[in-house]
Structures are given as structure tokens and as C-alpha cells.
Amino acid sequence: MLKSLDSLRYFIAVVKLGSFSAAAEKLDTSVSSISRHVQLLEKELQVPLLIRHTRRLSLTETGKLVFEQGQEVCTQLDTLGESIVLRHQQVRGTVRISAPYGLDPTRSLLC
Image 1 (tube, rainbow, N blue to C red):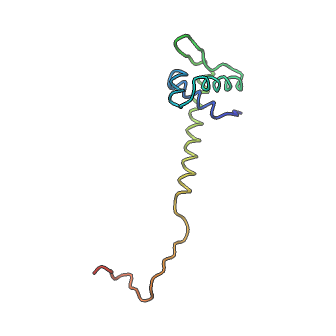
Image 2 (image 1 turned 30 degrees about the vertical axis):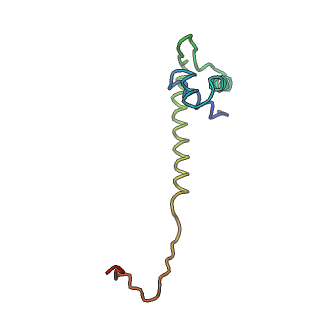
């Protein structure tokens, strides 16, 4: 079980954007922070996820699996969060309106 959702999100950003520096810029953090998170994820899963070349990154087979399923998990969590926020923003309950006795609701006040 993953302990760090942040590390997974950072890994996904690295893969999508193609580099640690692009992910760091997009997430407004340092390259070393991104690298540390990816290393933590690899350590937690006990497998390498990326093959680091001089000028590019490649995914290992496990890295591809973590990327694909990780994206689904993050999308589902984001959707869940949005649903909860929307639910709390909706007006619910009984609304009571007071009006003077004898007011005819079928008669317009403007005419």
C-alpha cells in the first residue's frame, strides 16, 4: 500500500512532462524535491520505476504499470474531492417564507 500520494503525483508529473526539471517547474518546487519523492516511491515499492539516461528518462515495465494505474487513482481521488466540495456547496433543507396574511400569490405586485 502506498504511503505517499504526493510521491505518486510527482512521479506522474515527471513521466507526463518528460523530465524532473519540467515537473519541478510545473509543480513550483525544486528538482531535488521531485527527485527525492520519486526515490521514496521507488524505495517504498522496492523496484526502479525510471531508467535515467543522460538526456532522457525511460519507464521500466513496473514504472509503466505504476504510471497508468497511478493516473487512474489520482483521477478518482480528484473526482471524489470535487464531489465532496460540490455536495457541501449545494443548498439543502426546508426554506420557509413569511408573507403578510391575505397576500394573493397569483396576483402580480407589479401590475
